[in-house]
Length: 49
Image 1 (cartoon, rainbow, N blue to C red):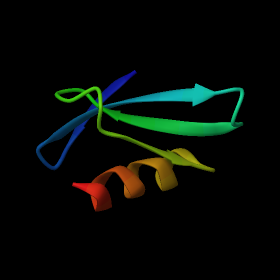
Image 2 (cartoon, rainbow, N blue to C red):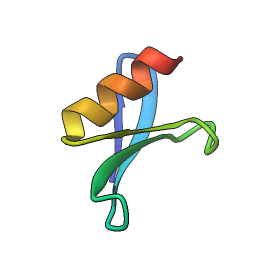
Image 3 (tube, rainbow, N blue to C red):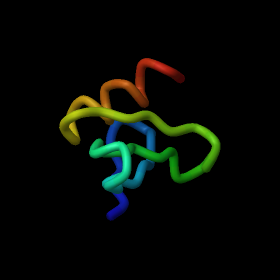
């Protein structure tokens, strides 16, 4: 899925190996962050930028 919020477009995926959600910046595939919940992954993605 792709979401747009506060000028950042991102996708959400689930990494079954790490058992964690991944938020991926849609404009830069190299910029991503993991989280236990979707909200954590998004928060971590935004704090990295």
